[in-house]
Length: 388
Image (cartoon, rainbow, N blue to C red; front, side, top):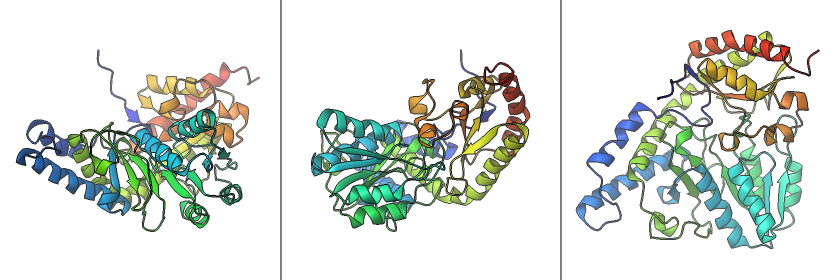
């Protein structure tokens, strides 16, 4: 039996709907132009020209050169390619520096190098707003060349790290800088000419392309050991036959994302109205993260003395989709590692949920949540052992 579509989808940090224009761009490469772009014949050659044209359009979104774009299967693969590739070039004598609030796709590989290969790995902390301890970063990179991997925007709170300043610190110390920009690209301007990261990851399904296509930006001149070993595809940097329909869809999604950056103020106003309404109608509610330096679409809120998972189940019954954190670590009953790193009190940490909007979110969507959320919170508090 098919699941009933949600009435209100506020889990866009997990995945977005595929834009109709993106579907239309993909369709001919399933049915008409299905040749292998690596083939020598004209049928495949035409597809390769389209792939390269799409590469240029993807590059334009982050102001990169097309030769610096590597297509992958997802953000996780892009992160792994960057971390493994750079760490193995630098060797175990160099440190890996990251933060305590990174996505599992970054923390997992870093901890793998620490636990299985004896690399020195440092996880820098954040303050109560989720902002990075820049003094700690300066201290760690002064010890010698390091591979530094820090997210552009947090996937749970939306907090934006000061990437320009981070780049000055890391590059000034001779380090290699990777940024997981999965939650930033398409939501805020990202310009790799201005912000000199060496490596940058993003994913199609966060900006209305399909799941299963990602990007790794590799600045020209950056040494990187190949992670996916096989054929000559992607300039020898990532073996495997190109996923042509999804590359075409990603290119169209990047075109649209660039056009819709102008929607950011409208989306931020909807987010702020949601937060203000819930703060007013739900006692002991709070907003987590830096209220100023964050992407426009993301709100992380705590509702003290109740469980976030219980809130989500009740919302789901009403056709409202939200999240308690990263979709890649859902199913855990432990509070989010991001919220814990920020020092949020236990009774609030367990009641944290994330609302993430998109350009398709409407005033009516916000009204619907504001109508139902206060009753859910009040009902759950009547059952809470922390409320007397």
